[in-house]
Length: 152
Image (cartoon, rainbow, N blue to C red; front, side, top):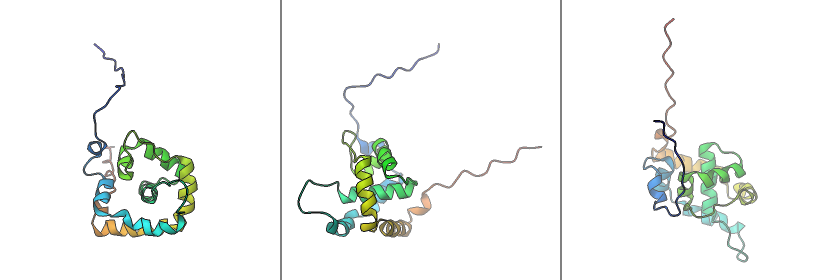
């Protein structure tokens, strides 16, 4: 008998975002090795002491790092990916029921601050730290070996 899967969303889920991110995930390794508090002094001159609280500059830096590591070059697409990817959410510190920064915030803030905070330089320095901690050889995984030639 053929089964048919019907999705019935629950009103309440009991789960932890931390449990959904695999222990061997690259972003988990990075979070264990890198202390991102270095971003605050770099970003401080670009923030006002008045007005509404901004998006945490560490979140913005981590978002840039995610984009760099996973080849996401559009800020709007990066924010869309962060919204749906559980590992990205975990890495940036957003739980499942929390709103992530939207594309407009990303384009305005990431685009303007990437240069000001030295985004490329900081990313490059962090990549060197990953290599020093030997995270890089394990990620990205080696590509699949070429398929064997078919007999003629």
